[in-house]
Length: 91
Image (cartoon, rainbow, N blue to C red):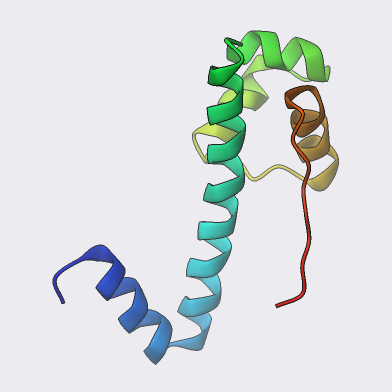
């Protein structure tokens, strides 16, 4: 295996539990990355976003550094002022 992607695919192919965990982490990383990218694009600090959402700045920081996983309510609070929407699809 040469790359991280090769390793992930190997693990996903050999261990169903690990596959599920990796896919959950990737999904969360995608959401959080979109939040960070849009916040930066809009020129907002974590404190600015927190004020817009009515949540503590420390919560924004913990979410952005993957120290906590936001619940759906908090996620929606973060997405709305950024003009982002959460889309759920059946795969």
